Image 1: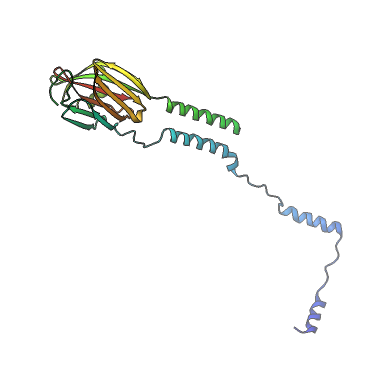
Image 2: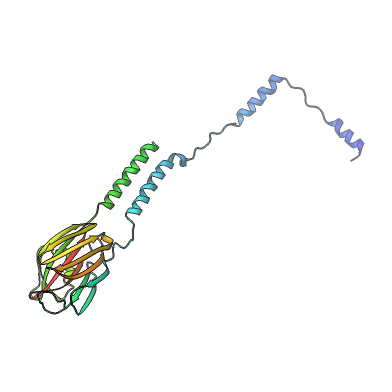
Length: 118
Length: 135
């Protein structure tokens, strides 16, 4: 662009008319009212619920620790060790399905009084 | 509000812990088992299925006792048998003697409502059985 073109363009531009101070601010306020300048911050429900969540979590953790699920309560009782101190011919350990009972049976145990075998 | 919630939570935890640690009881029953006409004496209905798994079918309750868990070497006298229990339900040591003669010593992990039958003790015309049931 030439210098003359720039000068010509500048000469075409007009300076905005001077405005009255009151007029400017009243216009500004009117425009500002068209767009709310302050939006209420939407409060998150989390802070309000935090104590309740902590409370529920505490109770759940306590319940799980004290009453763990699936810890084998459905299983039968278990024999951990057996030591037969009287004379005997054998030991049988049986599990009964219906009531999940466990049987420890000592065969031919000798005590002071006799009995039938097995 | 936070303080009251914390208090309620603590109270609940204490109650849960109290319930959990309250301790069970193990019942001990001495049963006479014989062959013959099928019979289940009173006081044995809850362990009938387990008893019937033995080769006997006539059961009579002779004596019963109870021990609080965890057991602290508590001796229970059931007829001629002395049963000594010690330890927690998860690791319960059971010693059985007849008179002064020790018969057996065994350790069990007892589960609630799951009966344990220890048998084969000679008896007139049958066997003596000890039934343990934790609740």
